[in-house]
Image (cartoon, rainbow, N blue to C red; front, side):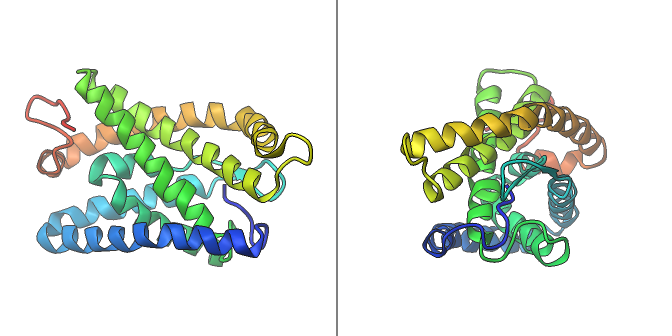
Length: 226
């Protein structure tokens, strides 16, 4: 992640576009609804998108045709729930493909699915689980960002494995190779992203607590709800 322009076979690129499109459309509707009904959320939406853009623009060369980097999608998933991130991540990935040559247009559907759909849902699930276990909200935020990051790379490894199965061991062998190489850089990046996410969330708690309470991320007692 991001998978480079033209790296996936055409059939795979089209298939991932088809899978991702319903999530993107639903996410766009959620963003429009949130913005219209609660104008005070617009700055938070912009902050979530900017956080994702900045973090996912920091790339380190990794598996051929891909790269390692933080994703930043877990924070937006915690704030607005995963559907919103499908749309915000699409905007981020589109700008990165056009302006930074990071990712590509033909691989946009695959990159959106891994970073904007799978990652946020896994991260949000970890956040909800942490809150139901009555863990501190900061622990939930840390897990959300770290696991959203790692889930993105697991899915990217699956996408690359499906496109380029190992001649001997097939999909499983190919995925194992991609995951093994990704892990060298991605495990420390995920931990760092989780810590950074907690620091940013603390700032948001100070400056936007009413919005966070309305979004049910925080209660008056500083406990988040699912």
